Length: 264
Ligand SMILES: Nc1ncnc2c1ncn2[C@@H]1O[C@H](COP(=O)(O)OP(=O)(O)OP(=O)(O)O)[C@@H](O)[C@H]1O
Image 1: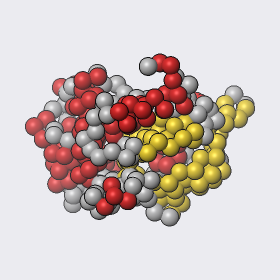
Image 2: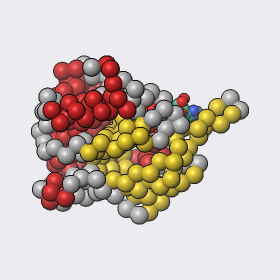
Image 3: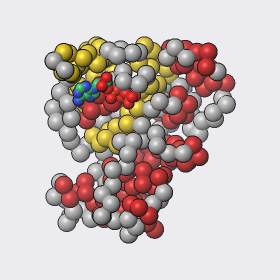
Image 4: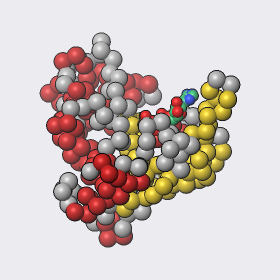
């Protein structure tokens, strides 16, 4: 949870409150059950930004897909503003590692997809240009995906999410395929967008530093079937500094929890 002082300094949030209660999940794989998530309890306050950090294959993406309403949990429940999540909804948008833009559509037409699918293109067309402006792509609205850099393509994918005015943004390694310099720039972009739009944010990342720079709280997951090993409160204002001794200490703690304590 964010400290009361930090919340008081923030603009009011339109974000969804999220509750995950005693959630377990498993997949059928080759005739046997593969347990993936084990009794997860999690609460996000409206407007909070939380990172999920954990070993590869522990179930982080599965948790995002469950919150997005793309899967149904085996046991337990997930509530958005107190209502059970049963299906996808434009108030909860998932952004993937791959921008997955249609190559034959311009940036603008890719961003329009969310509205088009909901039959809102006629009445809410101005939202496309607003979303492009938010991610700094106004000048590239008529470009095709092949004409964009990796960072620009990911910004276009973010615009495609933002055009829906999400109240909960689910980010699945959104910067995972970017080079390290672009990644640093995009980390600042993600902080700026979150501060401006005031959605609730749930970020899956493998990058401990990224989790600590971007989020209010970092949840460290154990091996599959994953449970939450620890919740690290970051408790620092933005912008944050990589070399802040408090962040360095938290990074060490997170690495130790992940069994990588001697890596640094
Ligand atoms: N549709 C599916 N059917 C069967 N098994 C699945 C399915 N989706 C995921 N799994 C399995 O569930 C486990 C968790 O997968 P998930 O993608 O959630 O992990 P993750 O923590 O996000 O991994 P990574 O960090 O490597 O992306 C993996 O063992 C994966 O093989």
